[in-house]
Amino acid sequence: MTIGEHIMLLRKNKKLSQAALGKAVGTSGDIIGRYERGIITPSIEVIMKIADALEVSIDFLVGKTSLEIDKQTMKRLEDISSLSVENKDFVLKMVDMAIQNFKTKQAYTS
Image 1: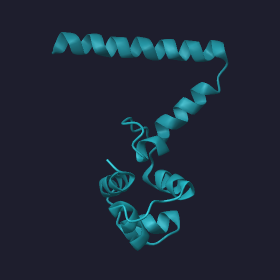
Image 2: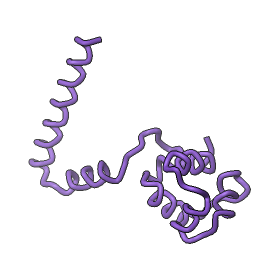
Image 3: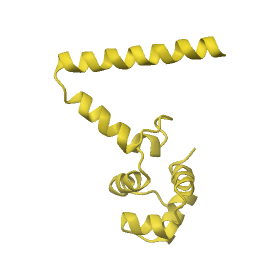
Image 4: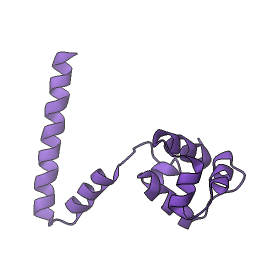
């Protein structure tokens, strides 16, 4: 999937018009349409603004990852990364336990 296709899909999922997205990133709806059709490619600065407006990571927007991380999750990851090594290890162990518990429950209910 191209960056333009990603922009269009995410924009439609957010129920935004091309004009609304254009306004949010400081350009016009016509330019957003050109990005979506692949006629022109946005600069990295514009890609950053579009990712912010659509509340996704740049990696997701450009197709580098299929993992869509919303702003709230990203903030949590940033908070975890700023912890001391000891506290970060503790939090990650708790997350690992919760994931394992979830997977175990899924295995027994399927």
